[in-house]
Length: 143
Ligand SMILES: [Zn+2]
Image (cartoon, rainbow, N blue to C red; front, side, top):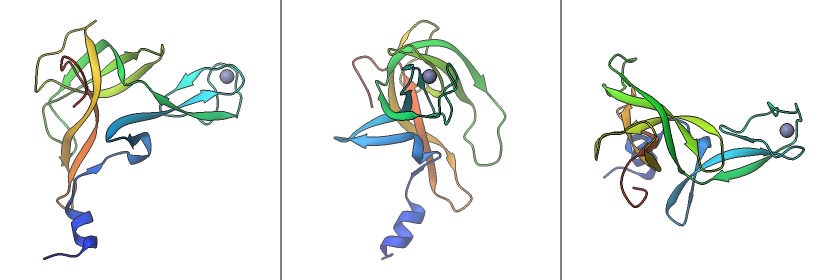
């Protein structure tokens, strides 16, 4: 069989691995928190958009929120699965983030509760499955 290097090339991988962390087997979003004013950001910004401070701490975000708006995309660059849904989620902490929205388990609706999960979004040129963090309306929690 293949060695570890080959398995890594063929296995699923995140489009933006620096945006997520696994803690206790649960996917989490890695955001930022301004040391000066407490403003949150995702992705973690290098400069605070509220006070322009350059001191931003790491901040793990809740992964629970409310769907602010969404759109279905029917055309995409080569390798992306279509159609797919993207949207803005208002996290419980009070910030709005952009994310893939998973409608495979149940349809989404504006104002509905959504939870963080992960799922396939496409295929890399080397054949590896690409996955991303996403939000879904799965009742009771994360996937
Ligand atoms: Zn700030």
